[in-house]
Image 1 (spheres, one colour):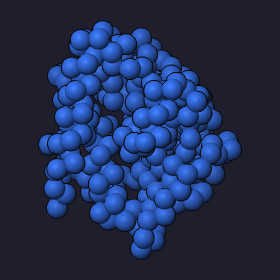
Image 2: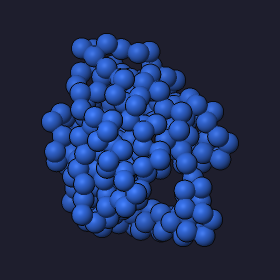
Image 3: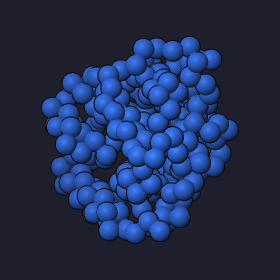
Length: 234
């Protein structure tokens, strides 16, 4: 821990930094049926000097997500079945070679290398326990949701050590991993910085799967989040 009480900042995009200044980081992207979207995340990651390795965890996809990722030259872990976001992230962390971990969703739109370098740069310059990336000026509905609920963002930078503190609840969480990280950060007074990801948004579930299936997926996500709120972190 850096300080005895949390210092929660809200910063604009940090300037691009040289790789030697921001240090090596592992980017981990859990993905389920994101073949048509994951390239928009992997290409800027490949261009970001601060990222030493990129790991895609294909969470039981059936649409060729793993093949798309491999063609872009990144490491791919293919899981035999869909195990959920938290377990997929943990598999990526287990195989990562570096202690700085960048988590990104696989369906981001508008991501650029400077967004990635901004997240890692703030982590290295200000030394918080966790960095959260929040959408700004991407699309109205995601801007509003992340303005009022930034702790639901899947764009995070943390250390391996702090991720390991959360592992004891991973078997009971899925989409709720973001809320679980937030709960643990408040409980243990982690320091935190927020970075505005200007022009970034993500594809809505209803757009991916159609209204009915997308709505069911959204309701499941909200249920997992609510469940995580009531999960005790011992």
